[in-house]
Image 1 (cartoon, one colour):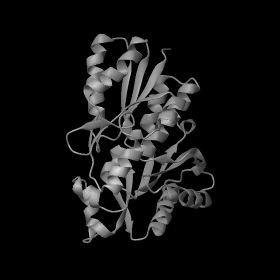
Image 2 (cartoon, rainbow, N blue to C red):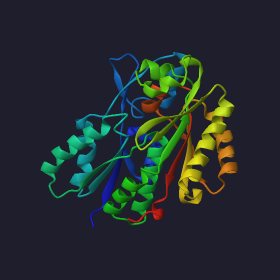
Image 3 (cartoon, rainbow, N blue to C red):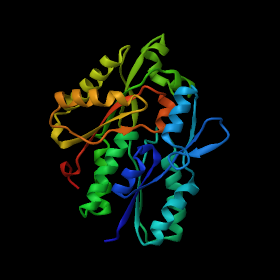
Length: 297
């Protein structure tokens, strides 16, 4: 059985420390403040710098997906070392990252015809994409095959959720990503929408004018996932993710533990530039994913 290397695009928002701990390699997105100079997230642009621009300078950053060349450059050393490739990507409905990786795969298969290169659409983003990667890495560490990990991801992405509240619609409106969310209110800039990313699609979960009530609604919607599906919270891992509002992590986790005590919470995550460029500041979310042991692989 060949060894394999796990990759992801940078939309997973794993810190460099987490990437090292889980032995996951990421291919970053690019971020620009002026529409001309694009910097690689984390590698050339820190989150502190990004959030300073987003909040203090009230900027509207633009993002650009990793290129085909970026993926070729990332995958090649692993292939040269005789490893197979597993690459997990942000949902195709939000980015063309997966398409870049698929094109890179076609190019590399000519040079490495015996290699297995699996490109997987996570149907998710940020923390929920990170949870899938963490489970994939755990499977790898426990000796599971590449095919077993791919099988897990294809099944688990259907049960994985991110439910989040954003501070307003200014950045979504500026980026042209309002879509169905605009129907929430005629006074769209004063509400805090609650959004659910499910099966790769954005769904409206509601709206609030109070952040405290919004956090309670996030927890309520998370609990409803288990009530409606009949799933056992003990079979899931979860994570709280925020942009700049890190003070909301503790109260969100406390409510979540009180409502769903069987749900195991991973360390919280800071949402990165790829997603925050579109949501803007003031975003808090709850991410859940099912453990691999709960599936037939």
